[in-house]
Length: 220
Image (cartoon, rainbow, N blue to C red; front, top):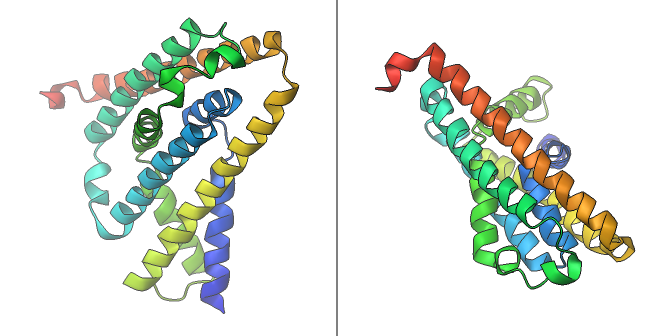
């Protein structure tokens, strides 16, 4: 009974964890609004696999290694490069409407979408600490009295499903909403999404530089 409640709780927490707007949601929105739902779902798959991977790392792997500031800085740097590329591409093509965007090879390519989804999510190793924190909370309140290998696997599965469920729901909602968007509104949305990606990229770059100047001598 308690295990069931614990799995429901991690599913719900996973669902709500995915709500704040980030780079993954923006790339998903671009594809959904362009009518490429299958490509959007590949974004979801790539992102969810990354989050699940961090769940395995948190409970079975190398979490202490990823606590190193230099390692974290590497993730921030790679993330900033990816976001600048995606943001630049979005700004370059923001004037394209839904009808034009539908033929975009980049947006509708499922393999590229999967890589984008995974790459964006994998630059956030803080997910490791999310998994550990949620597990600690559920243990403290007694929902999961003892963590075993089996329990950890179920925990990761339901948490990953919760995160993916929100992203899938968002994709279909946006696909439905695009029917009511004018070309002018869509251009404004595309422009806004590009700007937000660039801003997040600068944030990642700032975090990298912050660690670099504090630990510069240890990078070489």
